[in-house]
Amino acid sequence: SSGINAEYGQRGRRVYLLTLSLSLMDTRMASNQPNVFLFVPNLIGYARVILMFIAFYYMRDPELYTITVACYLFSQLLDAFDGHAARILGQSSKFGGMLDMLTDRCSTLGLVMALGQLYPEYFLFFQCYAVLDIWSHWIHLTASHYSGATSHKQIDLTANPILYYYYTNRTVLFGMCAGNELFFAALYLLRFSEGPDVGGYALFRATALLCAPIMVIKSIISVVQLVAASQNIAIVDNEEHAKARS
Image (cartoon, rainbow, N blue to C red; front, side, top):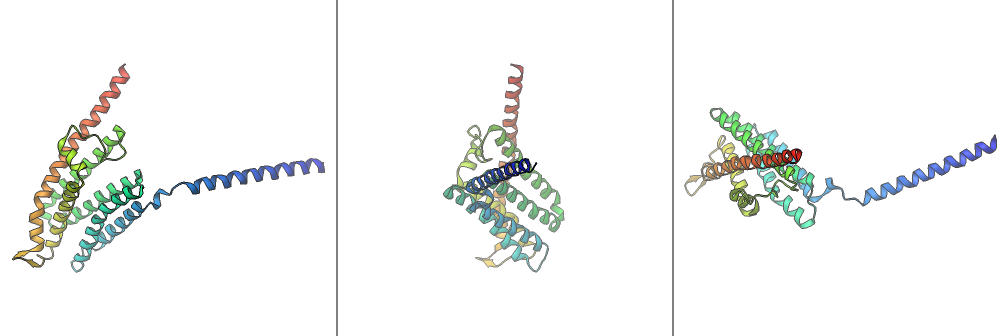
């Protein structure tokens, strides 16, 4: 009886040691894997989210509107740096791409919601803009997923010259996005102040007027993007139905 117990005890120790060894090997293997959540571009993305919520927190305070706009625009400016860091460091990731797009959409949506309250006479306009912005980007992202692209900016756009130029020319993309955000930020600032005088023009009002055409053009591009993405998804549907019938 004592011999049998000793034998089972030895087997138990061997099983325990084997399990421990395998666990340590898994830990070492896991430690060699890059932590996507700690990629530099994603750390920049987290900073953008924090700045976005700080801007939201102060957005309705008429005494701190400058802090609101500073945090909001700085968050938008960092959008240019996270993509640059991803390319230089080789740290592009699907998580980072999703974080980037959702931060863009949520920050703009938060500001547009505030503008709907500050300018109630234009509430319907801000509602329509928010719907178009979210709808067009989300369906475009979905179309890129169905087509096998790794990013919503990498879908095949050769059939659509407007979207092709918009997404492949970084200068144009940055200028359009910056002008669009400056338009809404200037509208927000105008509710509290005309801004300093620059060459005989009130800075905030002049910025809103200069950037308004960019906002309109970007909205038109969003419509084109929505239609093109819908067509791309329909192509995928037709191909799947054709395979099912064959």
